[in-house]
Image (cartoon, rainbow, N blue to C red):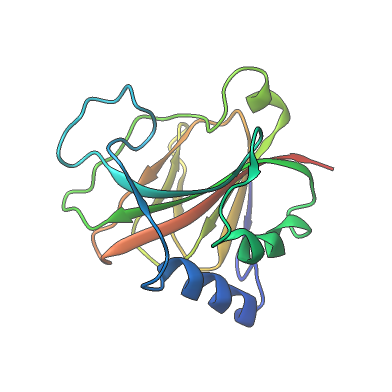
Length: 169
């Protein structure tokens, strides 16, 4: 695991922040957090914006240019998926099951990077009990086969992260 604080220069971080947390960004309601097999309950949801995936390439014209600033910095040979997640305030927060972002053999050859857009008392918990605090402009890089889960926040109206799944050079 690698934790990189102040991952982007301030101006780049601010551009990304203003794009994703501005009032004109299109978020889409997902009635589950990790996958559609979760029980449907009132507090098990998030807002998602899929930016790219392996089969379709970039599918978000809104975020494509902003997210391209990450490509070289991630040392990515190929990016398989980029997805932004936004969770809203809940007290207590819903804590989903542990998961890997990709399944099958892909999870064993990839990296998962989580970019935290804003400061919150939520974060990411790894299956071994490690808790990574949600700190704005922080990037965490994990092997793709490490099970993890997002932990919601109680100190902010929204928690926003961008997940990158990629093969490293």
